[in-house]
Length: 86
Figure 1 (tube, one colour):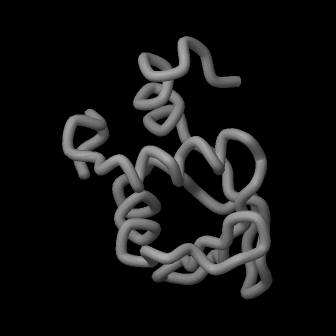
Figure 2 (cartoon, helix red, strand yellow; figure 1 turned 30 degrees about the horizontal axis):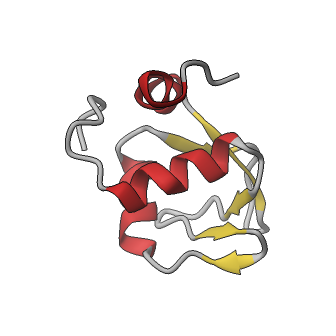
Figure 3 (cartoon, helix red, strand yellow; figure 1 turned 60 degrees about the vertical axis):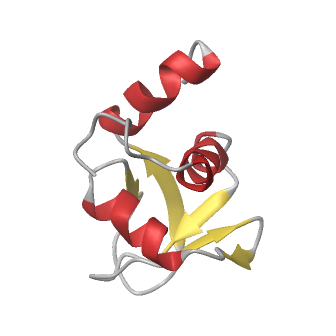
C-alpha cells in the first residue's frame, strides 16, 4: 500500500470508513490488531497493511486498545469516495 488508495480492496476501504466513523480501536503493537464495533476485524492482514501503509494509526501508545484514527493519507483516500472526511 503506497498511499494512493488505488490498490485498496473494498474491505480495506470499509475498514477505513469504520475508523473515520469512530467505530474502531486498535492495539499499538508492532503488528496492530484492529477491532470494529467491539469485534476483532476479520482481516487482520489488511489491518496490518493499513497501519504499515500509513492510512491508520493508534491514538495513543501502550499495550491496551486505543481509538484508531485516520492519518492524512487515510483521509485523502476516503475523501473522493465520501466527499469529505473530518
